[in-house]
Image: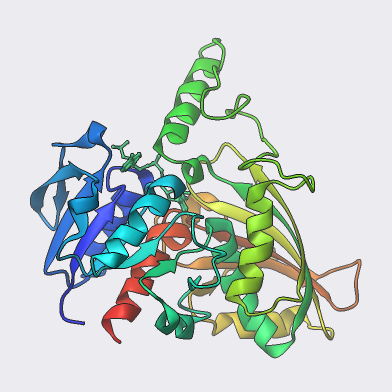
Length: 334
Ligand SMILES: NC(=O)c1ccc[n+]([C@@H]2O[C@H](COP(=O)([O-])OP(=O)(O)OC[C@H]3O[C@@H](n4cnc5c(N)ncnc54)[C@H](OP(=O)(O)O)[C@@H]3O)[C@@H](O)[C@H]2O)c1
C-alpha cells in the first residue's frame, strides 16, 4: 500500500488522541489524515504533525478516498459506520467490541497472529485492552509448553473507561481530600480511594462482559479454543495502566527461569523481575510506554505445572492505539 489516507473516528477521545500521538511518534506514512467525532466536536481543531486539522461530525459520507479508518468511538458507532467505511474502500481497524467475536473478522495482536490480517474482508478488530497485554505475555510461553488453564485477576485503570472517567477520578479525589463527598456519575459507586469489581455489564453466568471478553478473545487470538480461563476484572483508582495477576497451568512443569528466558526474547515484552532488587512493573512506570511488562514470576504453590506472573501495560497504548497502529503498519507492508 502507498502512503495511505487515514481517518480517525473518535479522534477527540482518550484512545483517539493517543492514535494521533502514536501515528506521529512512529512516523506512520500518511498521505492525509481526517479527524471525526460526534457533532459536539464539529469544528474543533486538533494538531496532527504540526498541522491544525478541523474535526468533523462522522457521517456516512466521511469515508470516500480513505484507505485506513481507525475507529475508537464505541461499539454502536463502529457497528453503524464500519461497514459503510469498508464498503467505501477503507480497511477499518476497530477498537470496540462490535466485531471482535465475528468469525468473519480477524482479531489481531501483531506479535501473536499477524497472519490473520490477510483474512480480513474490510474490518479488523483490535482486542480488549486487558486481553492484549495478557496474551502478549502468555503466548510465547504457550508455544513452548501449551497452556491448559488461566486464572486472572485484573486491576484496571480508569482511563480504560474514557476521558469522562479520568475526570471523575480527579474530581472525586479532590473532593474527598478536601472533606467533601464523591459524586459518582460514570461508575456506580465512588472510584476514588476504592476498588470496584464491575467492568462492563453483568452476564447471566455471573461474570461481567469484560471478564468474558478475556475468555473468548484469548482463545480466538491464540487459536486455542480449549484453554480453560476464568477472569475477575476490577476497576482501581489508577489513571493509566492495567495490571494483572495471572496464574497459568501448563501441560508440563515450567520453571520460573525457563519462563524468564523465553520472555526475555519475546516480542513486545519487557521483563522486570528481580524481587531482591525490588524490580517489578507497576502502572505509573508503564504509562506512556509501549511494552507489556512482566515480573513476579514464581512457581504456583498450588499446582506442579503452574506459574504465577504479574503483567502491566499502558491500556491506552498497547491496549488500544498502539496495537491498532501496529495492525495498520502490517497492512502497509502487504
Ligand atoms: N480507553 C481504553 O483503554 C480502551 C481500550 C481499548 C478499547 N477502547 C475502546 O475504544 C473506544 C473509545 O474509548 P475511549 O476510551 O477513547 O472513549 P472516550 O474518551 O469517551 O471517547 C469517545 C470518542 O467517541 C466519540 N463519539 C461519541 N459519540 C459519537 C458519535 N455519535 N459519532 C462519532 N463519534 C462519537 C467521542 O467524540 P466527542 O468528543 O465528540 O463526544 C470521542 O471522540 C470504546 O469502544 C472503547 O471500548 C478503549
